[in-house]
Length: 215
Ligand SMILES: N[C@@H](CCC(=O)N[C@@H](CS)C(=O)NCC(=O)O)C(=O)O
Image 1 (cartoon, rainbow, N blue to C red):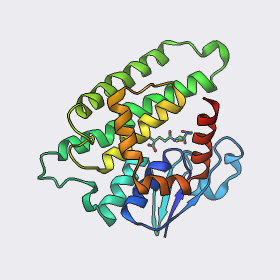
Image 2 (cartoon, rainbow, N blue to C red):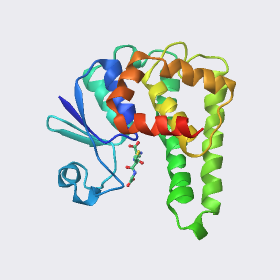
Image 3 (cartoon, rainbow, N blue to C red):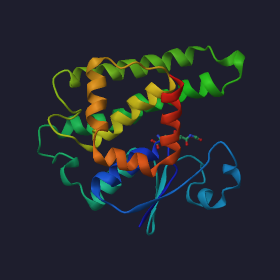
């Protein structure tokens, strides 16, 4: 049984495990209240960020790396194109752009806009992070203009990475998806595995419901 520590980007990992039919349990981590006293979690990830997993003797952090580990160790089924597939390079590229080019810059914007002291909220770095997000989003949009999924004709783990990032941006920095991205998000989030992951991630579910109610 795999233990997943924390929601947030842990949602990517839960969604992947649902797609793969792996059994896991979610161990909540509250980053905002008392994480410094959560000795069990800090023993797993002394750096104190989520997600992390424990799988037997294996302990890991970094959502995309965890996904690659699970796919290599227990899969990948149809979730990764084979290295000889013409879509493989595109798959690999967008798997990482989902975090390095999209969700990563969102973190910088959220931290500054929401967490920084009032007088430090307007700064050059926020504009830069938004430009990084937008330029990588351009690559996503260009791909989705002629393909239903981010690596091509079929759903892959890269769609989990990118969908999570787009939803995070919608929920936190006011990203308004165009028609193509909206259709894409509707397509990927209609999957049963997404719904099951959402049901297993109560904090994410409550957060999303709260945002919907606030509109
Ligand atoms: N690149 C990391 C980012 C992890 C990350 O930013 N996690 C957030 C929650 S989703 C967090 O733990 N933030 C608090 C911190 O970094 O100390 C990943 O993909 O796992």
